[in-house]
Length: 287
Image (cartoon, rainbow, N blue to C red):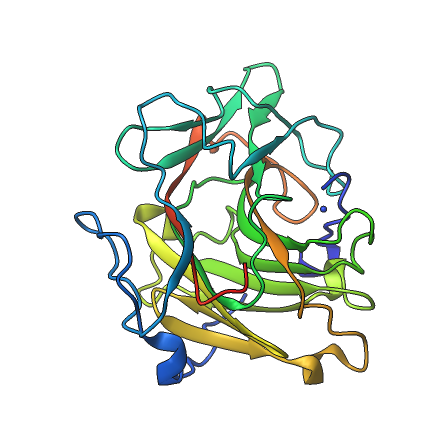
């Protein structure tokens, strides 16, 4: 499973819970962020400045803000033997009018699938800080949602040399586990530097919204879920290979269908499946 996982980028790119780490006060506290909606997780309790955010406020059916987001389109497997074709249609990505972005994976009923893949490449490329998104992920065998990043020098610097930071990935056959991973030169695909976090109650992450974040400093990245840190990676983890993360990166939000790692939809998989994103926020970053 993990050994076959591969993320060769075609265009733009079990486990038990790890012991929770205690974040330092400088990482865990929070600023006067935009107001939390009912049921939203509180902003991190820290003296941190909100550098950038998209709260996805807009009319139902409208496109995500083109000042921030690009649509990557097309099929061909995306280096992972995925099945979906990414489109820029509102059928696959749209605001819901309630302050959320909704990415929808759909089946055409004949073995074909569509979805959306949004990036901030060339528009929002943070360097360091606290980066987080509050997301309700989709569910089902063969469904693969992700909130991740690629180095801003991509594609001029090819993958994996440009670097990849996976803030959150989930594969549908592990509904109660999310993964955080680094891919770089000498440690990519199935050899990525990775860890996972299990839902404290063993429930599906698709049942509710959760906040997925990294606290990113020069030479260090710490992953957390709902404020609970579960792993930190530094150059000591790359086994002598280059650490390529002290540079700007851009965000990617997508829902893939099928692939070598998650496997493929079966009779239990229901469509459409939606990833609902309440916000993406960046604190204390060099933007």
